[in-house]
Image 1 (tube, rainbow, N blue to C red):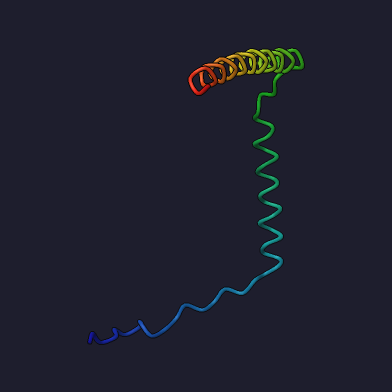
Image 2 (image 1 turned 60 degrees about the horizontal axis):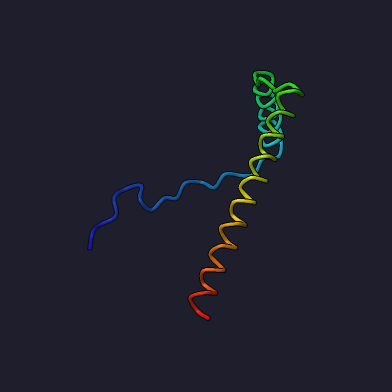
Length: 82
């Protein structure tokens, strides 16, 4: 059996939960978040509307395509099985 080296039998002291330190960390986090949000380039209303409409159109086209493919495959399976 290996011998314990000096210092192996000592555990590191457990950190105590300090509410003041956590509050300072919380405040620091929100200050840094606020600074980062100021760096963001937000889209204009026109850009947001255009992007939203592009997404809606794409969703409609894809749903129609997948619906037609599903219908066609269902008919093929129906012909094969019956």
